Image (cartoon, rainbow, N blue to C red; front, side, top):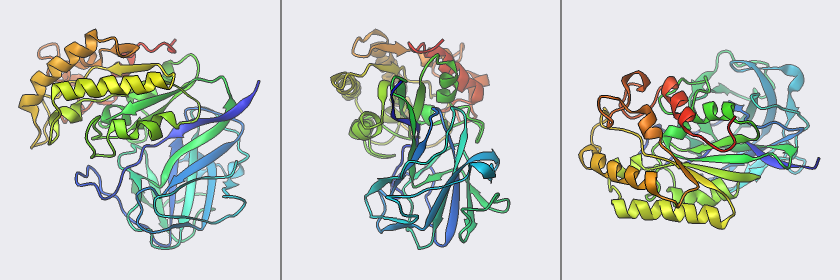
Length: 371
């Protein structure tokens, strides 16, 4: 059976200079950043992808290593491997650039936690980052990439300079991209538990796997938070190695954040998203827009967003532009008021699902590859 490089993990990144910041980025200098990357696909070898896409100065990586995780920031020592770039132990990534490492001789399986340690000797400026990774990163002074553990490290729930891990795997394995907002990224779920909706859906697949390209706060039509969905579709979906299917979850942020989209514009945006996927030969599946009437955050356009959500969902339930639409909104809505999240599924902010809500959302997505 032939093998090829497929995406085994993905992490969508944003600029640290966004006007709307759900979490702030940070810079590093003479520090080691150890990050946990949960692989959804396995393979005979791996390679890692680093990004300085939104940096304003060169990013110097003086040393990098990967290993499988034992627990916390502790690694399984015998699995540790040096990461090289064109044969060198050190690399400089220019502002705006991205890089893929050399192949690393480490066999991995779906469900493994790959630990990536980067030593950053010089001031980096604010990092290109995933603002809400729902996993821990560990930050320690000096060059600690070879340390068995970083027990005294500072912790962060953001992810820095990493966009993905590729695995050398059977070429026939389906790779699905979950493309959307916080309902994919995992807002409201337990940090480190891998209880995002995409994680639960992955557990249901009979073949292949799903990589997560969700960005909390992301919109389909308007930049911030992150480049808007149509703008990042080529990079975060079409450029993913091995992509065979697309799952889309957009709409809440377009309806309630400032400069809200019109119903017509949002329908046109969904239609264009489907057109682009189909033009690339990819089936695309979409979710209805979840309830948000109980949101606790001030300054959102809830009153106008609620009736717009009704119209958008009515269109989604009847449209044929997508290969299928999953009614996740109905699955997680309160039986007493469908504009509210069911109380036992609410993370507490009226906008996001807790772990059980994410499980129910995944169960409502009757994706063709599920068991």
